[in-house]
Length: 103
Image (cartoon, rainbow, N blue to C red; front, side, top):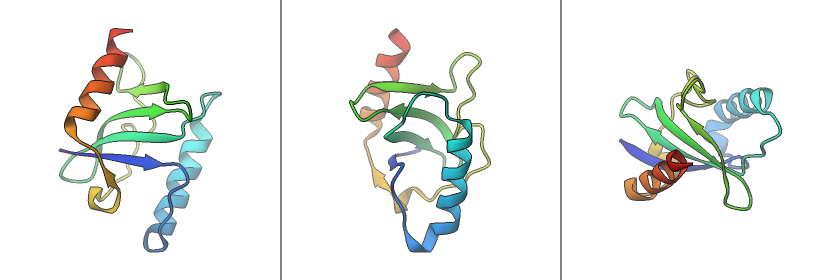
């Protein structure tokens, strides 16, 4: 597994089409929770295993999969190359995941 931080405003010319598709997909599924960035657990094949959405104040506003929530990334067919994004540690991801699950 690899762990990445994906900003909504991120864009790279080489992946522009994928980014635009992903962004349109995410915007179509958003409610009133504004996600500033995502912490994603990415499998070796590029699929997303778990996701945490964080707002501009650092508050976790989305986590998936959790109960009936399959998530925006987890439930998509998007495949990412984690080497193209800012990496985070497994510990950082797990710490936020466990904190959220305690609520």
